[in-house]
Length: 161
Image 1: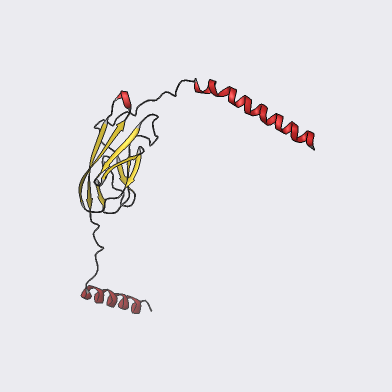
Image 2: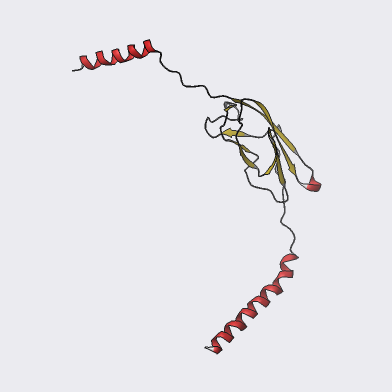
């Protein structure tokens, strides 16, 4: 039993020494190549509403709803290495990722800004105006229309008997 423990200790020490010997080689490798994201042609930030389907895309409805989660997404949503994403919403700056989800608590037109902090390669900025409206309540039938609807249903039911 003692011999088995001794062999295990020797094997563990050998593995630890091998890993320590490999550390300098790993740290000497060049950092991964980073490509800054290509800016959208008009420096805007694409968005889409996750409830109403509002969208900044051509042909989309650009008006979103109060309280709706809205996804703002620069490029494919992948975080570029050595890049920080500083978002500016109506309530102040927020560090984040290329894709952010935000809810506006009130109606109005808001300017969303995004600054990519990339160090010596520059700090490109993007911005997007977005209009937020209160959702309209569903229309309801008045008393007269409701009585007329019920009477019509009764007449149809009696005729089909």
